[in-house]
Image 1 (tube, rainbow, N blue to C red):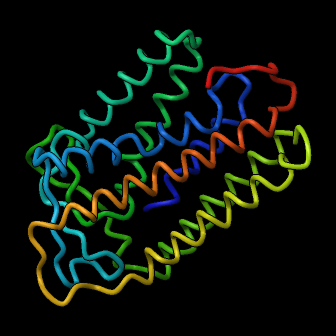
Image 2 (cartoon, rainbow, N blue to C red):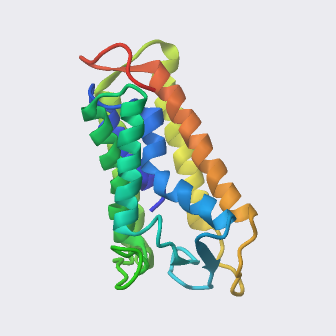
Length: 229
């Protein structure tokens, strides 16, 4: 699951009680943002293993802090507290927290068993990355169905508001296709070069920036004219 993680952000951002789309894009990938930062600093680990799953060679064998359910809940709680400290309402805080936790639940669908509840012990994952005929349409329907939901419940503030969602959609689709078509490595790569997590962080930053731009060009129907970030 990659762009599918943004589906809860699109749905949540259509509520006048929630934060805007840019902030919720960060919330949707907060767990992975933390993971790749931890990888860069050696706190969590991943490696490339040819054929680890049909669609993804990444063996995420050590991620107790970010991809345990308790860890995801901790990031969600931190998001809620941060939202309140920045002046957001409790409804906005809890909606954002739910978007953060949704990352673990969506990963559960596609990951090989590498997710834990408490950071150790039994590992979980339904491994849809081994079933491209299911995973690919599922991810596309989740992402672009949620984007359509967002667009129908917001209105453009001008010409840019009419084209911004389409540009975001094209960017999401382009990078997802690149991710799907990326060839499997010929041999185990352990450790991965720092360029790999750095590239992932760049992609999250790019999508976050585009989402902030979309949010500035659209208004939730029936909602306040100004919302937190």
